[in-house]
Image (cartoon, rainbow, N blue to C red; front, side, top):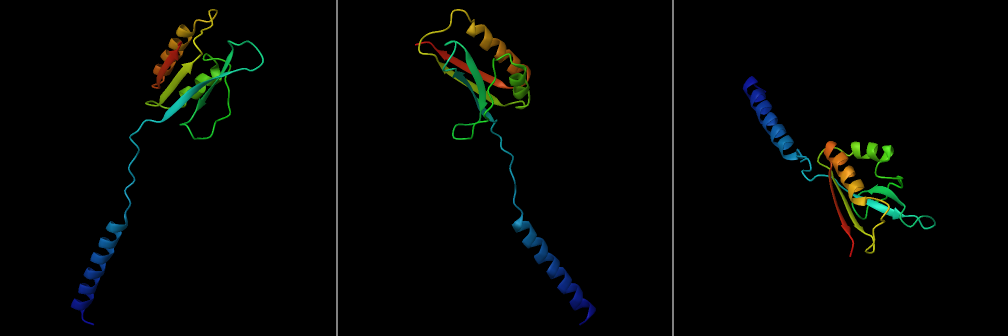
Length: 131
């Protein structure tokens, strides 16, 4: 083989190598959607009817974390919220059968929790349905 033929073969081989590798690259696009979680209130079957436990769950149809927190002010719950990351959405839809405990200021407690979430960059939205 002549020197010229070897150079030509090298150029053609390099071209095919580069062309095939550019075709096989997979572009991974980061998700632009903010993670979403649901805050759930769990009523205790035997006990004070106005006492609840709280959990943070993933999107419906995902496994439960299995962790319950005693209150919205619970340090472990707040630590969990702190780890969710800025931009995360946390939603609570709470239908309590038309009654709210008069001994607990739920509006204040939920607003305090919202303020905490916002301080961590977590968007907390809640609706309390009293009808």
